[in-house]
Image 1: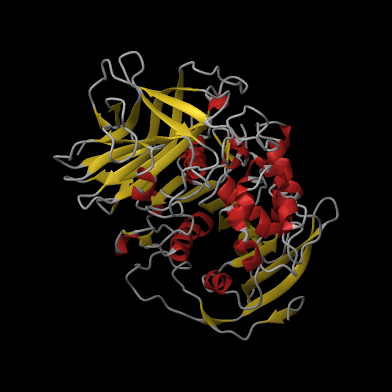
Image 2 (image 1 turned 30 degrees about the vertical axis):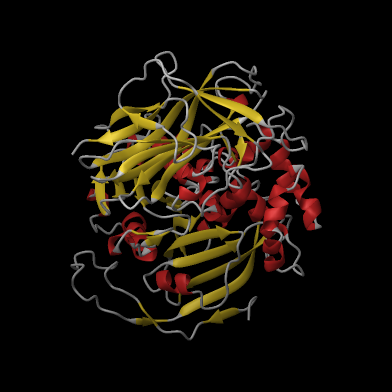
Length: 577
């Protein structure tokens, strides 16, 4: 039963390797039998009196132990938690906590908002317990990675290390991507995190597409039948104003005194946050001792990391990851001082897709990167896969511009999830411009940040432009590599948003985030340009009105320019072999 302090009868093996660092990893460690003490639903008080439900798992034996902490809105488990048991048998105490307002914790669930102070207060409480040796490591992914980052700048003296997976530390910049609302991610997530207990999730899924297509966006919860205050708050604060301050590390990375092992995926919905965290923690403002204790690992994964089969591709056995074993190796080194070689490895480990091999690097982005522009060309008819669009490394001269009509009633549909999926079904559309290279005569590795520079005009006062990088296989499959979007009124991040002048040409820099992909010999490189990617991003209605309350839909006539004066291109980070 929960709420009981029990002495587990489960016997588990306690590896002596962490006690004797001189043992070779290839030797079979000596073992001893121990029991697990489980304290379930312990109510840990926060500074405002709210108590959070906390499960504690620890070895039944004398002494104090390093503690592994996970704070989650998805439930803190129950008796016999397998992951907790895994770490307890290796000499750790494990603390799993429901965040405020979730499951058995008190308070109101305000998504993301209270995690800094609640996380700090929890770390302070743990550090004072008789079974804690004063050293805490945190772990978990997605929202659970966010709960690690937010309290870190508050400098609990007990926090030693973190292991955040597929996560972020600036919530606004995840909710809004260059001005576009990430509808497919945060709409359904909000529905699921707020639904009444008597409403089954499958009933929500049944009406999901209808709800996402509904207008105005701010009334999605009315269609569901219950209020979602935090979703309304997000839609009412599209800019990075004070509302988001409690959900961002901001400029406080230099206050973080913990080592960090960050794990991400090339196709993860939060990839940019993972990379940004590593870049910030290895910047010049970070204490050199902390800077050298930062690690970054990126595999070919989506948000569910560690699998070999992702989307429509199989990346091979080497793509698989045993996350618990990796965490154990990291925590053994950082919390117990075991010299297991992990700190002697270069700080960055990436999986090169296409080649399907892991590789260590010394930094990110790679210093040896050669940024190469691939310019778009056509005779003015690049519409669809059957058009005349192509890319190469030659600067365009005088060329006819390409045109298409963007109709929010009929947006370009997102194909698959964030993984590698064949894009041919959208490439037949006339509102998708397709630019394809010649067949590659040799392998070309693209590793690093990817950006598209597009010169465009529109008949609208505000609209969107999208860009997608695609790997075209010899059999015709067009596999998505990475993509991005920009809302026209966010074309210049250094100034407040402003409408565009219809018919005027503007320069748009579209961030496609990053990748590591080997475009193999006999493949082709392709770029798609359009104005929608729905429901991944909300539809721009082209009116210039406030997007969350607008219900009017206008078509937009889009013009894409490529000439000496307007050299539209995609900039690829090329790594020479």
